[in-house]
Image (cartoon, rainbow, N blue to C red; front, side, top):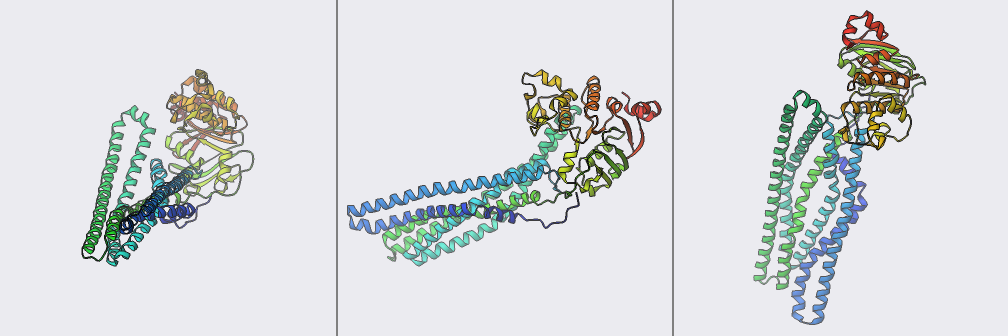
Length: 566
């Protein structure tokens, strides 16, 4: 995995263009149907004016029947075009939002982490609210065009009655949009800040849920809740600010639209009083003045939604355009499964060097827990190869030259806090459904008693994060999953800290037996696991300071005896 090249980030505008481009067909169909809807809506007051102008003068049943038929056609067109137009647009909107949610989730699930300064809770907000608001652009553009069609048709119809009425509509529309365009920028900035604060609050909730039990254990839950209350209050205040800005925007838009409609009605009344337009044209003008309130309202709201979509797209770009912390290489490790750590410097590690031969079972007793965690992170490729000094080799190949698939296939690092997923015991042990090694893994991890407790056995339902399991049961379930993977190289980090001494002794023997002939490295202070290992390495002060069997170290190393004896 090489250092990634610096790529020019794609802004949120490019995300919006992508959304528009791949929904162009649906948008054209939606624009035509919604344009037809707005045109039919505009035709209704025009038709009423013509009826008053001609039909009532003739006073014939034939003219009245034609008028009623025309109105029925217009009303039917309005109903059907709206129904099918919105159906097309909302389907495209929903589908596009789903695509972005999947894409954001895929970035978070990639085996090589991305360089994103966002927590999981924030990424969740990006994948939900921001994806939805970005996809709204699919509806915004057709509605914007169809509203413009209605305004243009109304202006042309009024111009035929009197040019001043048409010019008044066009000039008023331009003035209204100019005012609202300035206000919409404030909405975009406020919305982006609100989304950021909501995301931070979501991230804090996720952290609290994960650490709730430990927090209760040492009484830190009140301080944690206080920290959440602070970020939640910040999000609430920003939401109030956004609501205030949106309210001001909506109120201003409504007032300006009403002012324009009033001006058109009064001007038409004055022209009719002066005899410059007929009564039928007056009816048409007053009807259009009332009608254009709706398309003007819709047209004036579109800049706000555009800015909100742009702000959400910019937040999605933070995730989608973030470069990976490392670029996978093309090579694969040689068969055999040897693991070599050569002069690794990272955090508290100060040149750690050791080799685990193929098929060997080695334990590392780390006197400083942080050093064990940092070594596990390096081996799990949670730290990019260029971010630490030294070299890690798997099967004779540098880990930086291997593809991610090759690393995951040959090397598995099981963390001490392995996640438990909602599902069943079986799906947690064997997520891929391969069915290999499940029975042996269950027996080796001493999960047999958990399976035997429930009538469903391995199909017993497990809640999210293993909420219906004890700490020891969750740890054994995670260990069973690691053993069932049956990788060439297995690294276990404190796999038995939550189980009793008798169970720990049995697990140590079982793991050594099951992994015989397979390369295994255990980072632990458990005497049972240390005793089961072929040899023990002592990690102290960031370097390997001793190497021998567990019993020899107990007999001849007082510091080791104090560190691991229980």
